Length: 254
Length: 254
Figure (cartoon, helix red, strand yellow):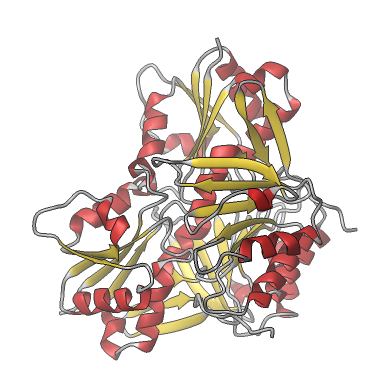
């Protein structure tokens, strides 16, 4: 008998941004695995075991959840935002790919969630209204020049950029390097948005420009959106500005 | 007295993929605007007026919703998926940008939703597990060469691609052209995923390769994911294959 592994997206953290499907998955699970602070967001339930782990232990966490499901249990593995965007879904697939044959018999269900790029964009208007790229600035597992090459390629082609994992204590310089690389291909006045803890205590959203963006604080919980040359800022008396990228033509190339 | 405009993401269509915040916004609204079939998904409520429109009337719909909110009402404008991804949020911002000064006083709230790329990715595993780009194949408002240039730039730089609006009755050839452009920079065996009507009647998900993808049917409700050279397919006896892109290094460039 083989169980079920539900990989569940919790969204940005505000309980109201959880989907009904995610709520149901969490209610159904006999065991919940996840990064400690994510588990703390969920009210405890009787007959449900909890298995918190550190955020540097993702492969180990995925393997533990798979071993638990393998024994026939319904197991939920929770993830911030959407599990498919720089989160646990790929880690689970990778563990199955490399793991014992019978892990391939486990019923794996990925439950999508609101990823940070969508939550931050919604707070300021529609900066992702045209084609956009989603890039992690983490160079823990890859060379930094690859990240910079992707940033320049995407910005040069007119994509708006959503930057995940912009900075951490161990990676303090990458965001400034990213802005410097982007400044070689984007105008200094390009809109840049910083968003953190959307819908939670301490929410912080700011709108600035590429030439001034280096002065803004950022950490692993921050999502940075860098506009394209088409991104516009609408000032509003008494209200925060709206930032949007028109869906229309972009730069003509013909 | 100026009202409130809630621009609400309905997700892919399965009611269970709606967030609590979206449910609350729809319940709160005195009037609901949207594409007819989206309004049909919502149960009628007393004292709530409904204003369906055609899907070719987006700017007109945004203006009508803004005029209604301007009179002091709480108005919801519903959007499939996420309103910020090729949907109504940018259209509303654009209308405010070009519209009368007092539209800037309207309290505009964007309520994010599960966009098609996340819903389709979740169905097959984690194909968006590495950096990815979100591109519309519609050339209604822009020259097709711009779209092809972006496709080639993104694929050459190693991004996974999520393609929105791949085909319609009026645009029957763009998807085949996109695959042809991508075939110049990606291996023939690159994984390609077609997803349609996720969580709804007639859901259809298929996994193929770039060299065979031209034979798959697609329309405006289809979302196509084109993997990178790193995307892997895990076959599972008795279960559908898992498709994922490892978070790790990508192609080294040093």
